[in-house]
Length: 589
Image (cartoon, rainbow, N blue to C red; front, side, top):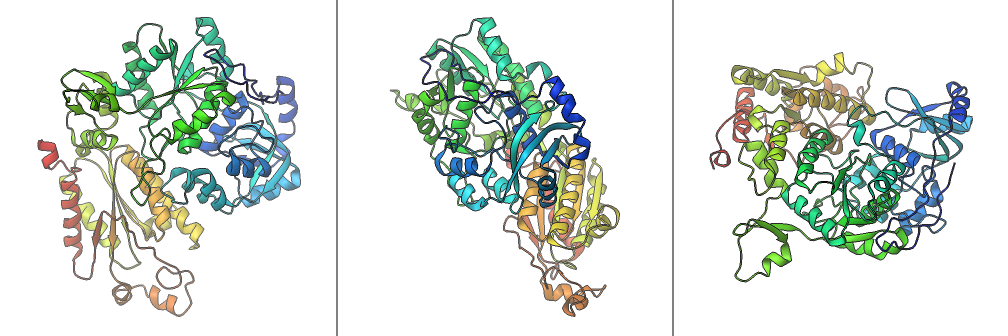
């Protein structure tokens, strides 16, 4: 097992010889470990942890030789460096349940398994600690705003201990998709050598590539007289991003447009933190480990967009500046680019500042990610100047217009507010006109059939709502209509459900805002009276909070509306948004 050495200083356009960590146990050692793992506690890795384990195992995260311990984690958060001074920008840690940590502490070891239960690795010489997640999140991401995916992920695990120790990998996670496009750092280095590529420009992406990206990458390769590695992240990215299956098909459509032999596509199993400048440094370190000499760093590289205040988390070129400060230490050079825009009169792309400096002025066209999503949702044309027709067709297959998508209407409100009745009325209304199947997931019925073992603690309430969200996401993915009517009292859990479902189709949050006084008057089951008497602990609205949604798509009060009127209001909303095929100004334009 090799440990990482200090990074080489600079590369002057030739491949850096960074030492790669290798955490994969020999066949003999793996057989020895397998004889003991049945007696050890185990942990099923999350999607992000699976990605991290794979990149640790193959050396893509060199110089890391395992999940970080407390000293390294705190040093990285505070200084962008490991405790021994080597550059590393973002914590790579293993969070587990308190029960798992306790068992691991007793055994002195922990087996790491994939979601199917197959053992992948063993951690020994266990270190367990409880991090200060707020300090870490603010230090690493520069904010505590939970709309930042990295912050949300860090704070979501609050209360969970972390585990570190000597890591030995029995086998890598299994991939059944795009197997011939997945390469370890050693494999890519060997492939570059076989092809005679001395200068390799890496392009990091988590989105489909369009004409602007094509022009940018082509210019980058020409600028350094090198070849191009399209190296998309195919682990967890930003909620709502296009799935990696669709993206890879889009990349394959794009490749033939490059000059023959210029570009290579390889998939990176990276779970992104959307950490802006710090994540750009991480991307540079990873690409140096893969044998690249250059990295394209564009505008707002790895940025998560805007925060709750509507302002960007990071300035547009902060990532370029931070990577440039550490180029020599990393052993990679940055190729900086600003946003590329299209000149209609010339039928070509230029960097934005160059385009705006032209005399006479030219017509500048661009389409934002938001506008592209709108065009896909409403069936409007995607112009060929923006994307290659094959790519546009692929996106349309994956993202049909709204009237052909599945969608979820998610009701929330106090007990007795009228959610279930309104949902039932809407279900009947939709079944009169919709060609898609309609499934009603009523809170009480789900409790009876899916969550009968759960109580009413916050943890169990959240689990129940996540179960409903999971079922609804599968219905939505399959093109059906899901109507969910739980209480869903907690804002963060509702947001998680929205993000999970919106990745597959439409989502509308309907708040039935009936006041608690009215809910108590209508309480046929006598639940409020029991809660007031202390017979029902943790009852929403009495002894447990209900967090009113600020992001509801529709707010209705059953005090002044009948169930039929509420259903009609929701039906009209769905028509306006295009889910039921109604013509809108956008669709007619």
